[in-house]
Length: 128
Image (cartoon, rainbow, N blue to C red; front, side, top):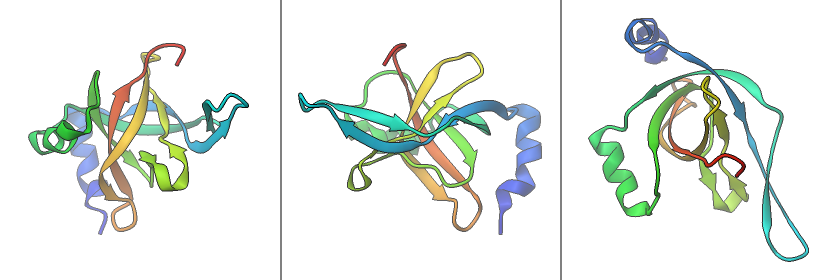
């Protein structure tokens, strides 16, 4: 049962969905000098709700040595964080203010049963 579809309109009254751009990771290529260059598929429009990380989320990320600004995003569909076994570097989400955020990892993978994913986003530097 997709409970998110039931509660989303009520949550959206307080914290509206944002129209964002998502560029899905398609892996990376390796330059002759050995540096890796991430690759991304075409950008697509998505709606997501951004929220502060909850205490349990903060406990999950505390040992990962991830620096910078982070937030949680609820996104309809199946999205990925960094998946080393698949050679993927995480999807990139561009928020309406043009800031870019890396889907560092999945906090709650409900895409197969409920149709949504909660991801931890890390803000990216401009030009990176």
